[in-house]
Length: 382
Figure 1: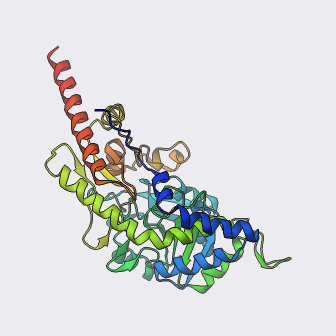
Figure 2 (figure 1 turned 30 degrees about the vertical axis):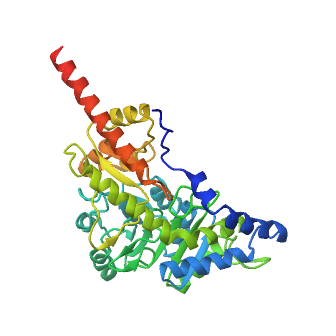
Figure 3 (figure 1 turned 90 degrees about the horizontal axis):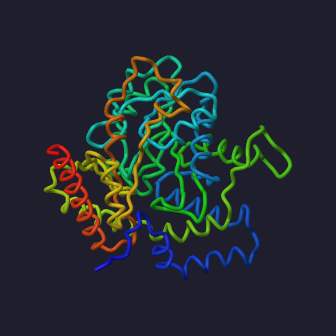
């Protein structure tokens, strides 16, 4: 029996499940023709601030701009250093570069692949202005010891929460843990727009005010500009879409956690597969379900042949990217990061996704591992 191909992400199924609500929200914007700074933007900002349990949310054009704006707002600039990880999307480091600062990369933990807080202290210098912990795959960095390290030194902490919408740490939401936090609403995120969009959240009114001006040409009134800035406003249609989706996010995150448990149960007896750990202090929202396997690229190719799409997050660490290789020293080795880049494999997971697709994915993974082992054994005896 030929089964339909399993996509890595299925945005059409999600849209179909809330089509009437989405279409009505977009129609209201179209009828009003208020495409920039419409009332839906302010409404979404208030609702998302509520999710994060913070005082301020400032919507902007995309997640990269959000991180750039936040770093500027906390005072990072030319000559400064910002500590972060190399196991992340390049936007994390790009934002640091865009404000004129230097990224300083530290390694990640073996179990969670999140920032190894113990390695951060050794990376601090008199030039360190900020730390950017990346809440990867849907759960947060161990924030309390990181904040204990940063606060006495006057170092700002800006959370990169692009993959952690609705995640919590010791009962506190991602976004409410540092001096500021940034989110991406790229379509494939747990909370995704119908294009690019982002936001900065904070409890500091000075940071919020600075970001609000900087996203809109440094504007204080229509024709008065306090400083030269940029245009990074969230479109009203994107805000309307996000406001609808935000109402469904808690249920969708619960569905993701249920699917992740099903994966975990099915993978429990496979010695060749290592799951990225969920820490007890976090409520993981599983933006991605990531495992580590030997011969990852071969496994992925075979699974694709079996009709199952997968992802890799991320195959080239930032310190080995052409854009940042010049920052590495001869002594720098991020051993956990580099090994993870060779082994990580993201399995299909989205909301809503039917549970039997998890079972089919695991069956394809098992078959791929078996076939690769069989070929290796045959080659060894040839």
